[in-house]
Every structure is written in structure tokens, then in C-alpha cells.
Image 1 (cartoon, rainbow, N blue to C red):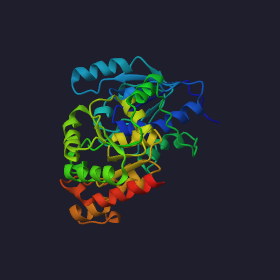
Image 2: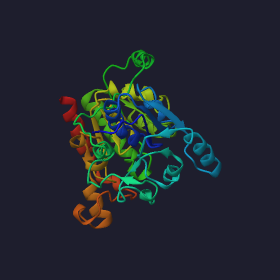
Image 3: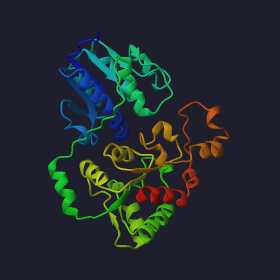
Length: 341
């Protein structure tokens, strides 16, 4: 007999990809406990992607960086009392908040996946399993005794953003989100230029470059070098909802290991991911790993001198130049195959 939780809470303050990965868990909680009040603590700017999901109260917190930040966040989270709280972020900054959450039951990650002594801050831990990061979040629902094979994201797009997209009059296009949050996971400028030139000349399809304000110059360098009216620079010109609809309506989305590739995947877009830091089986776009270029094994061998079976699961490669292990030809072959299909 399942417990009847009246108030359920969870916390994930960052990053975009991780918050996307929690959504199947959120929907399972809604289905399993339809009468429960479910509160999700998150942070800006990521909250804008999920805040209008029906049946969930999203509380936006400031990511604590100072003593005064912690005091402010703790004051907010102490307002709530939970029957069940899922501690779905496991780093020191967030671990320090868990003791201040009022909950009859708190569940977190196992000691292998929970960083910075996470297990010391949560009374219960889900069991360890070697699995994709999205499935790790679903480990909470399995631990609670319910499971489903259905993966739902269901990110709502308000009508105003659909009209925004229609007003762009873009026709058919692919999206390229070139920058990752870490420079070592970003492919080289010359590789992107060569790839975009191939797409435009051989496929005769528009390429829309996306990114943040900080990525705008990088994207503009690609656009200027390719010098084609088929290349549009949208970097710094979209919010996350506009980016979502842009991805949803695209023929496909190309991106390195970054949050936007998971947003594109959640919106139902075909994706081509560029991976060297971690294996696609762990952090790739869920259900589309076969569309990715996974050079993790090559990077591990080159920079660590080891094979995958000789290192701990989730061992990260973080070296300058590691993305050069991915060739433009290999990426274009993946793109061409998806476009033909």
C-alpha cells in the first residue's frame, strides 16, 4: 500500500539539462499522487522553461553564494512543511540547505553519485545504479515503489511564443547551438564554420545559430565567415521559451554536451550531439544517443591512457583540444542521414 503524501517537494537549482531530466519524474509524481501539493524549488533563468507546467508550484530561489544569500533562501524554504522531499541536487552549495527543509521524509542520491558528502545531509538514499542521468532521477520513483516506461517532458509553449515563431517566416531550417558552458566542451570555430558551409552548400537548408548574449560574437564569426543569407544569428535574441519553439520546429538541432541539446530533445526535435567529456550513455540526449558523435573513449585513451572498463563510471575528460577528436565529416554524415530520413 502506497503512502498518501499530501505535500511533496523537490529541489534542483541548476543546470538546464538536469532540470529537463527531472521532468519525467515530476510527471510521474503528478500521476501517482494526483491530490498532492507538489512544490519544486528551482532558480532563474531555468524556471522560465518549466514554471507553467500544470499542477506543479515552482518556487524560484536565488542560488546561494554568500551568507546573506543562504539566510534569504533558508527563510523562504522554512515556510513549507513536506510529507516527502526529494533532494535531487547533490553538491555542497545545495547540500547545506537540506537540513533546513521541514520534511517527514527526505530522500537523496547514493554515496557514489551524491557529491560533497551528500549522503550526510539526507536520511535516505536511493540505491546506486550505472545508468543514464535521466534514469538516475527516475530512481526516486522506483525507490518509492512506482515505475512507468513512459517518458514525458510536456513543456508548455504559450500561444504568444507560437505566434512569435510564425512571424519569423523561417521556412525549413536546422539549429546549431555551438557553445557549451565549458570551453573545453566547445568544438573549434573553424570546425563549425566548415560544418555550416557544408550544410548550406550541400543541403541547401538554412542554419540558425543560437546561444546566449555571451555567445553572440562567436556565432557572428561563423555567420560572417560562411557569408551566406542561409545563415541567421539568433544568439542573444531569444529567451528560453522562444528557443524551445525554435528547436521544436527545426528539422534537427546540433549542439555539444550542453543544456540546450536536452531542451531540444525534450521538445521532440531530432538532435546531433558532440560528446567527448562523458559518454552519451550517461549524459547524452535521452533516447537519441545513436544520433550523437561519441568520442569519449578516444578522449579517455588519449588524455588518461585508459579504456572505459578501467575507470570509474562517470569519469570525466576535461582537456583543451579534446573536441578536435570529432571530425566535420563524421558530424555531417549524421546530419545528412537524419535530413534524408
